[in-house]
Image (cartoon, rainbow, N blue to C red):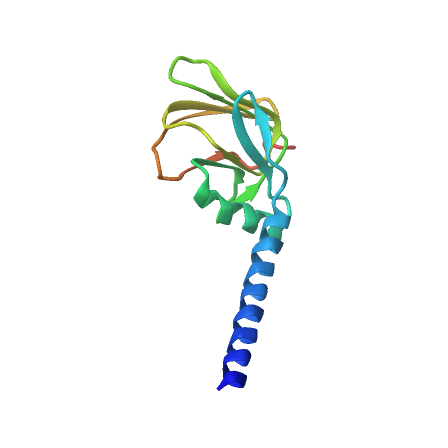
Length: 147
């Protein structure tokens, strides 16, 4: 009986180690957290592994912004986006000069306006961030904008 208990304990420890290493690997793929004023954010996702890790992490962040160019069938990620998020009073709460293709932001619940500029062309979106509910906004420029 003692041997069975020991094997079970070892198996459980090994399973925990494997699960933990997967989590650690996903966390290691995330870019660092930065701050703009009081708002924390992550920007990145150029490689498919990092993009997947950021999208997965996005379920724990109040706002996810995705920057892309429209294609016939799908969007193509873009980088070097100037992103500014303003609160309901018009005050900037987040400003990133080279964002993308995915940006996660820890914003307080409320109404915001997003200005995203790629190659001199600005898109604007209004968004309502609600407590406990992740919000995702896709900003899509016409194909060829980034050239």
